[in-house]
Length: 353
Picture 1 (cartoon, helix red, strand yellow):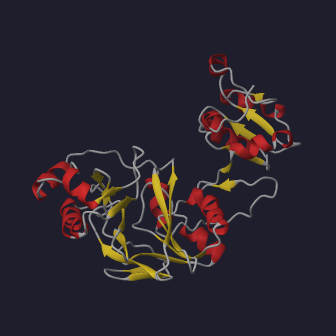
Picture 2 (picture 1 turned 135 degrees about the vertical axis):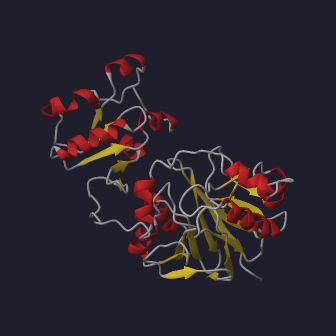
Picture 3 (picture 1 turned 180 degrees about the vertical axis):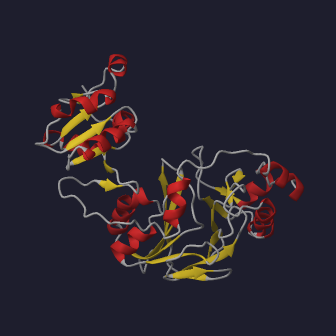
């Protein structure tokens, strides 16, 4: 009897990217699909906790909105990096094409070449034909854009209607992104209800829709595309700090989880860089936190102590990134940004004064 599939759907809130873990429950062999650089520690911890043997990281295409974590896993575990032969990625261990199979214990994923969003887009269908991982080709009630990076509305229409829509109606669609909290769909639903390509829409309807969307380019395209051309391999790999379990983002920011900070409150110094106007309106404060508004920080650096690691925070975790950079350039070594700021802190129910 074939061993069951072990399956996890993971989410990166910043880029609204889904990462998928697919494993054979008996052999413990596993692959990751569309990893995110900043979520490496999370995903690596899951692999270790589940005692899995990670074989490879698969990318459905060369992403423009986030940096893949493939190289980080290769560096940590010696896994293979796989993507399409047409992706343009230069350091792959294996280039994939139509009908290639990635074996995972007693299971496999089969490759479908589905260009249109990019020339190098591929999808993965499991051996039971019950699940398809569609990347940015087919989304839930949508599809990938076709206005840059070799995009072609005509190719995408053919990829969806001639390949994905030939799968069974019951086949579950797991997309590369969703921006509205939806987790999955089915081929049958998308054939009937997808407003761009479903129902009675023909190629003219679809191309007319896609060519008139006028979307702004992804915010991180200038960083993501060149990084993903080498599977997310950074120019330098910093040694992990020993003073806190920080995660280094691809842009070099050290982030720390609010849960860890709350559990080690007496061992760190918290620097709150919200403005006085914000703190007058939002009374929540962290015990003992030092308040220096971001616009005053450069002139008050001498007030920030160096005896303990400094953890920067603001409302959403964005301006505190600037505080992190100001302090690091000024010579602070043990410093990290509290991920998600007060919004994440309070959402997790952590204590405030």
